[in-house]
Length: 156
Image 1: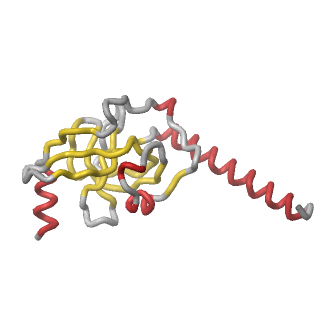
Image 2: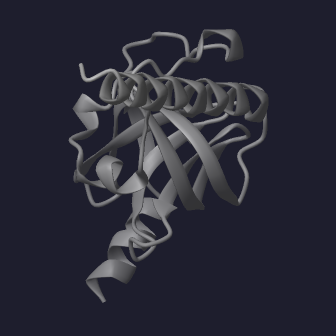
Image 3: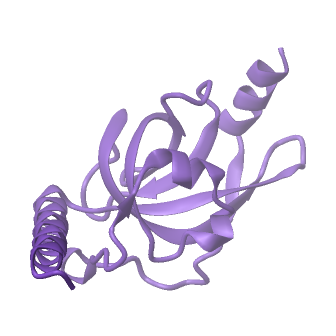
C-alpha cells in the first residue's frame, strides 16, 4: 500500500529544482565515457550526487512524463519506483528506454505531501554516439588483452 501511495504522490509531484545548477545538457558531440560504461546495478547503488560524468547502461520504464523530452524512469528490476530523471535532448522521451546514459548529478523535487525526493539526473546518449562509444571501449579492451598477451609471451 505504501508503494502505491508513494507512486501516486510522485505522479502528481511538481519538479521544483534541477541540481545541475542551470548548466546546459551536453550536445551529442560532447558525450564521452573515458572511464568506460558501468552497469545499471552500479547506478542503483550510487548516491545521485556522485554520478556526474559517469556512463551507465540503462534499462527502465517511464513513470511520469515531465516534458516532451524528459521523464521520470524506474529500473525494470526495481518495483516501478522512479529512481531517475532522463533528459533526451531534442528527442521525445520514450515509454521504455534501453541505452547509454551519462550522469548529470542529482534531481530534486517536492511531492504534494511536501516531502523532498532526490534522484539521479541523467542524459540519454544518442544511438549513433552510443555505438561509437561502445566501439571505442571494445577496441581499448582488445588492445589491453593484446598487450597482456604480448607481455606474457615475452616474459615481462
